[in-house]
Each structure stands twice: as structure tokens, then as C-alpha cells.
Length: 267
Ligand SMILES: NC(=O)c1ccc[n+]([C@@H]2O[C@H](COP(=O)([O-])OP(=O)(O)OC[C@H]3O[C@@H](n4cnc5c(N)ncnc54)[C@H](OP(=O)(O)O)[C@@H]3O)[C@@H](O)[C@H]2O)c1
Image: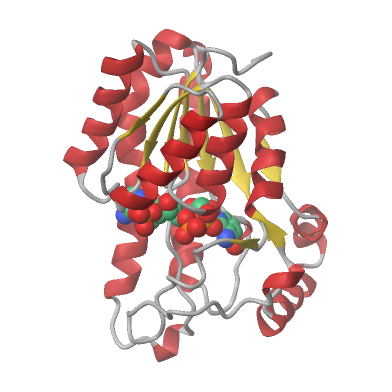
């Protein structure tokens, strides 16, 4: 894809963080945007910012864990813009808790329902239109989708599921001309960690991250713009993430130690 001008892009989880930053970048680049997330007020605010940059924008509040909402987001996008070129599966949630400290396993089910099944549901609804457009699916996974990370068992499982799903789908869609770009961000400053499920299954309420030391959502979105334009197979946003992918083949214990250190330092 040479340019985003006039392309229709549907972004899930577009109200805050990486999704919001990507929407703003795409608005500046001339894309037509359909944005979805649960909080209608925050979503409306992002849509208004995109419109102020000159973009045509549609906001469709919805929950990716609800099958009907996923279908509605896609149907309304196509109704409004007549096509769908790029689907960005970005909506997500996380957890911060050791597995042996979880009060129950409900959080693990919720993580799968939102991060993995939510992305699969929106993709299923979007697929006929993406095939017509020979478009692109972007899956915002995580480094935790490529390797194990302590205190993130449920999150890592949901992101590994996402990676396995989209790696497989890429092969199935090759003959249809639909591409799949998997994004594996390292830690990013956003609302994600504040809303993370803790050991009791409730949101932490404040971020445990060393925020000044990690990448901003805007920096992450900027890297994603290049990867999307190139229809890149995999984007890993940090050097340690890229090195870890290869180091894991020859020294997996070292990569485990680095993951444990990153969690201990919260960055
Ligand atoms: N931040 C990081 O360190 C990091 C690292 C690696 C990967 N990621 C991934 O990047 C993606 C974006 O996260 P972020 O860091 O930008 O966090 P964020 O600021 O919390 O953004 C998450 C977005 O997803 C939406 N969302 C959450 N649950 C939803 C649901 N059930 N249905 C629809 N929308 C939902 C949120 O809006 P509502 O609450 O209004 O629904 C929000 O717009 C996620 O998939 C995350 O796993 C983040």
C-alpha cells in the first residue's frame, strides 16, 4: 500500500493509547476512519480529534467480546464508506498477577474473550470486504505473544493465541491477496496497565510501570504506520524484543532471565 489516502481503516480499541495515536496518524495521512471501543465518550473525543485533522470519521461504540457488536462495527463501516481496506485488531486488556496468586481463573477467560476471540470475531465479519479490497489485517499482539513473561500468564496466553491465529490465517489468505501484519509492541505508555486485572480479578487502578522509561503510544503508532504501508509480516517495536526472538533459539534460559528482569524493573 503506497498511501493511506482514501483508504478505509477500521481500528478497534481506538479511544485511547496506541489505537488513538494510530487513528490520529492515519487521519493526518488522509485515511477514512471507523473507530470502535466501549466508552462512547472517549471514543467520540478521539473521533473529533481525527475530524479536526480533516478525516472522514465514523465512531461505533461496542465491545469486541460481544459478537453482535463486532458485526455491527464492520457493517456500519461498510455502510458508511462502501469498502474496508485495513482492519486493525488493537482492542485489548492485560493482567499483572502471578498465576499462583490468582483468586480464580475468570480473568484468564476474559483475556481470551477480548484479546483473542474479539480479534477473531471482528476479522470474521470483515473478511468478505477485505478480500474484495485485497486489503490488510493488522493484529496488535505483544512481545508477550512471542515469549513467556512472568506475572502475565493469562495475557501471554491470549497474545500467543492471537499470534498463532493470525500466522495461520495469513497462509490461508495468501491466494486472496489479503495480507496480515502482526505487531508485537514492547512496553508502551497507555491506559493498559492502569486498567490491568490484578490477582483479585479487579483493575489495578494505577500503573505499575516505570512510565518515563517506556515508549509512548505515539512512537508505537508511528512505527506501525511504516509496517502497515509496507504490509510487513511482523513488527517488533524494541531492540531487546528483536534480539530476544533470535536469542530464544540458542539461549532460551537467558531470554527467560531478561523477561524476569524487565518485569522486576517494570520497564
Ligand atoms: N501498552 C503496552 O505496554 C502494550 C504492549 C504490548 C501490546 N499492547 C497491546 O496494544 C493494544 C492497545 O493497548 P494500549 O496499550 O493502547 O492500551 P489502552 O490505552 O488501554 O487501549 C486499549 C483500547 O482497547 C479498548 N478496549 C478494551 N477492552 C475492549 C473491549 N472489550 N471491546 C472494545 N474495546 C476494548 C479500550 O477502550 P474502552 O475501554 O473504551 O473499550 C481502548 O481503546 C492492546 O491489544 C494491548 O494488548 C500494549
